[in-house]
Length: 362
Image (cartoon, rainbow, N blue to C red; front, side):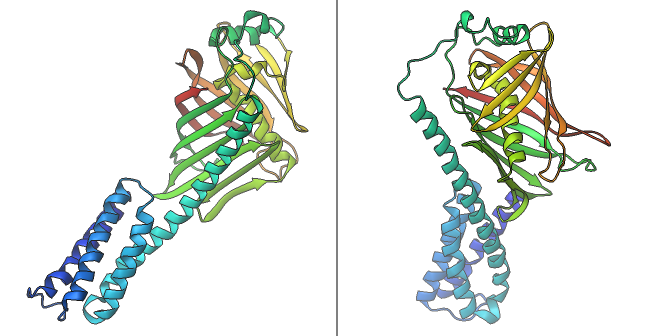
């Protein structure tokens, strides 16, 4: 779809050169006589339109501005030569629709970027002065045995306590249990550790239509927003204690990518047996819990929580993140391939399977 649109804009732009050539005296029977001033405008429209095509394919948001200028000039010229050039209106309409969608997605991205900067600034203000904290063996010996084993295996002992974490993911997603088709997704996620917060931003193609979304927990509140083309809401949830709790539980499960956070005072651990420990997280009046399952080696094998799937649900549903593969980033061993599954009454619904591509600790 992306390359098809590129070709539409490129070819449409090149066709505008005909108006310029006509003004120079070339014989083009399909066009009426065109004076030199109008011919220059046809050339300008062509140059800006062709430039827009290449700026678009380079994934630069400037194409929204150049494209708007191009279709305005183009459409004025088409109206002046309506009888012969009226069919050029169709590609202009297509480009205009794409610009509207592009602007909506840019606004969405810009808002998410502001939210990311807000949580990072909050973390920076909180931890502006303290010295670097190095995790020691003495800091973990009071935790349940499986949690100690996990922390040692992950390699956090002797490492600095992370303050922010940036993660990129590639995955496949399904929207409901009756759907057999998986949709490829790419996501970025930011975490702050001193103050529990995250923002997850996802891009996905749904039958060749762009879907963008954001899930977050910040200032004690969770909120999710998934839209089609940045314009049509697919899933909107927030301002509800169930959403706040579910988002905080998500943060709790995802500390598997930055195990240092297991030592933070907002998380309380209780031993269940030699392979399981219950974690309870509490922040700004919101509380959530989950059970971490470990093997003898110290690897996390799965995370199980009772989460609200929907704000209209009367009771929470079991949610499982199962680890399929481990990897290592900056000397920290973490789960890198996982499946996320809702245990519904009609059976397990694995809705998301994904891989961690990159992790950066700061």
